[in-house]
Picture 1 (cartoon, rainbow, N blue to C red):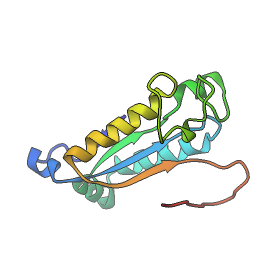
Picture 2 (picture 1 turned 45 degrees about the vertical axis):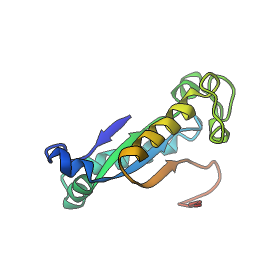
Picture 3 (picture 1 turned 60 degrees about the vertical axis):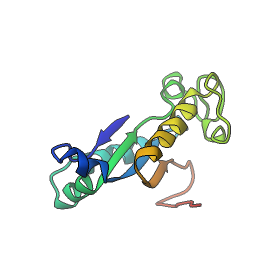
Amino acid sequence: MLIITDFTSTQDQIADRKCVIISARVHPGESNSSFIMEGIIEFILGNEKEAKLLRDTYVFKIIPMLNPDGVIVGNYRCSLSGLDLNRQWIAPSIKASPEIASMKEMVRKTQECRDVHIFVDIHGHSRAKNLFMYGC
């Protein structure tokens, strides 16, 4: 996990910031989500005034690859344990889907000390073109 904000600020200023959580690559075959994540990270760390404003306003918690084991073994949709991790959010097992269990714990602990402004989970699609979004 990468944590990005303006760390030159005071501790009180940082503590008052809302959090933006961004994750990608829960499905190993969605390699295009890694390219999107790379662009997001480069932008947030950049010198543009908008990037500086974002770092001054938010604490970003970024998980660039939520399913590294599935990626390493070349799976398309599943983790090393053979599970579609995107279907484990309701009741993740620490043994079978530690990635999701840990992610949920991180979000829970983050909410104890600051508001989560937005959670973005970046995926790719094998047939859809351009951009599409789902929301709650």
